[in-house]
Image 1 (cartoon, one colour):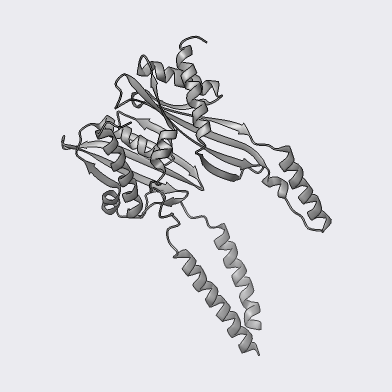
Image 2 (tube, helix red, strand yellow):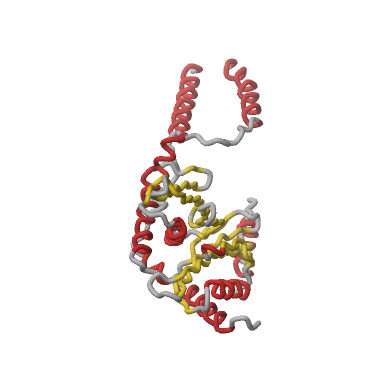
Length: 190
Length: 139
């Protein structure tokens, strides 16, 4: 009887060890298509880019900085010789309806005698990061190409990452370019 | 049964010892220096470091990255992409023998280093396209 129990235990341990070994040797968790261009990348590039007329590279960069300020971003990086601007902002992602739903779930959970913490998974804030690159147009001398890429990370109440996403909605880019166009028109006027 | 009972304190102690042990971080990396360099580097027949760096930035944008740091003088760009997972890349552009430029890229996803040569190949395929568009003067 003892021998049977022991050998069953030993077998389980051996299986567990093999499973752990296999898990440890599963190797790289890196996705294979991490740096592969999507078929739609040219289309996306065109949605994220706009050609502007401007007096100089300095003028369009100044107008770009002003737009980022208009949109309530803080600048994190300026590399003027490459025309690169990166800015970010924290946005409140707190939603009353979401919180009500999660608190209701917690109450229901407590009524069944268990302890749940659904509320802690409620959205708290989002960090939006945007890069705007201005380069002299290759096809149209004296014009400039502005290109924007945006992403955001959403955190829950425990500051755990809830969502990571690249923003590809063309309307967002359209609105930024409209603002940049207005900013160029307004020029130095504040 | 006695044997199993005797093992419990030993296992408990072992658990305590391993739970408190904290491994030092991997500071110097694990890959072969030469192989890593070969996999991460590509040569281009141009001497225009600035234009190559702009193509690198454009490629990173094509791949959905935002730029964290960029320095033309040092020919360096670091970028991050937050999409399902966090990916960070550093790309350097430098002249070689006054004849061509060397582009080197290294990437990490979360806590993992990208060691798959095909992933770097994908990056250079994307960069080839951006370099072609620049050469043909297409915005």
